[in-house]
Length: 324
Image 1 (cartoon, rainbow, N blue to C red):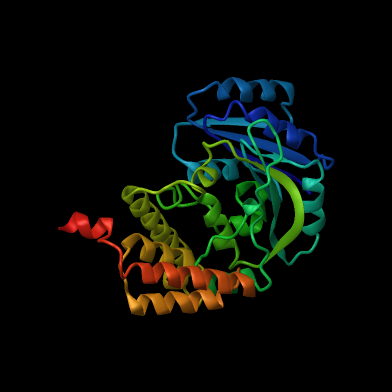
Image 2 (cartoon, one colour):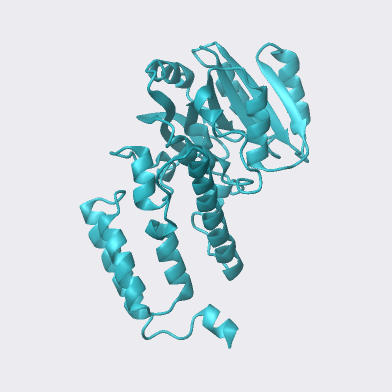
């Protein structure tokens, strides 16, 4: 079973060798590596060319003008020959047994995709005490979970994703306008409606936190009004993209963003204005949220109510001030 490894790269010449080496060191050897450079301005071309010369039968480099992650995925998939397509970010690395485990799981013909845990490392490969990249292991069918939670994002990033070619053929090419960023979200959300997604409770790779990668840089950042507006637009565009796919495959249901806890709660906080109806609706979502344990539901419900009550006595929100 040939595995095609697609590495999308943009200005990660510093980390790219470690990513490629982690694939070359796999215990399972029937693979090809396709490195798509999305218009890098550093010396990524030199790095890729060196690996092509060193391992011409395993490494193929493709260079294109900058078009975003979605376009890089499309280019890589078009060049891939494998039965299984595995994605790796240029700044991440895999454990040596990653591909072997994938091939074992894909022996089940009902499995169309595989996800797994990722540990977190820093720029110098030091293991970090942060586990949000592990994601949450769903205990129900992923498609139902997405419908129930309105596309809540609690899944691992690109380097933990692998799919059958037959499934990705129904998803690709990705709409590069909708999925310029968050293209891994397109893969996760769309393939969930095409068959069984297996979630391995195993750490098979490392997600590198270095301040420049998108998911990491947004974790503890204070958002401006512009950031919030951009985030909201991206969430809404993502939802539209998923529903467009569901319509294309004639799936009977659609994703309702109003069920998304992060979306509803973040906008409510951002507006900073007391709204009893919205507060009660969000409380209901928290109590039903499948990614929270009972203790977490109590904690987050209490925190949300306290913060909501604070809106009754606080000054006008930035949005209100801007409109006066």
